[in-house]
Length: 72
Image (cartoon, rainbow, N blue to C red; front, side):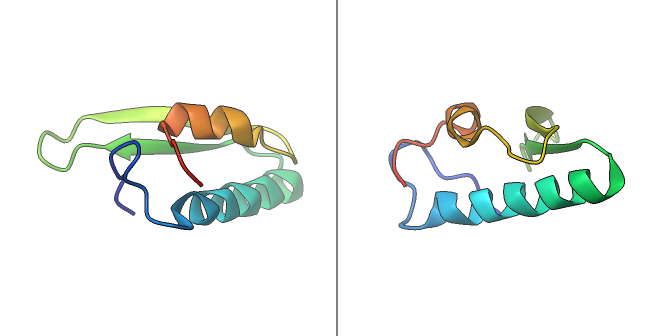
């Protein structure tokens, strides 16, 4: 999904990210594997790992900070 500019997030956008992180946490619990949420620049192809899902309860405040979300 597209990463909006900070402050321009549509309503509920971060909720979608939270649901993805929650699903990855369930997969972590079931398979004892870590997952990563990252971004890529579609023009340059540069990627960056922003957040690792390493537990059954991801730190959503840290996720919000890593992504740079200002709103909910």
